[in-house]
Image 1 (cartoon, rainbow, N blue to C red):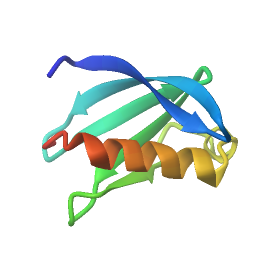
Image 2 (image 1 turned 135 degrees about the vertical axis):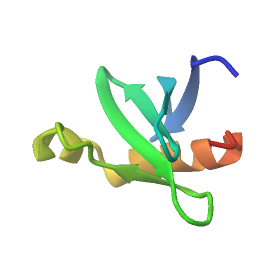
Image 3 (image 1 turned 180 degrees about the vertical axis):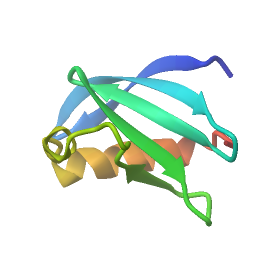
Length: 85
């Protein structure tokens, strides 16, 4: 799988483009999702389901700009990908 790729998801009936970038770390691969010029980060939990995480350098206001439906749609998309990170 390439280090990054683009796709789209449906949010509120509108198709939105996203870029997904794999960020390998020592213990797991984090995933950066860029949407609407903003970046969200995800990692697999103990059951290999993705959850959103806040990176230490991110401001809370940057993360809170996203509505829960957008975050849920991204998580569903990532879970369907089966990235094996």
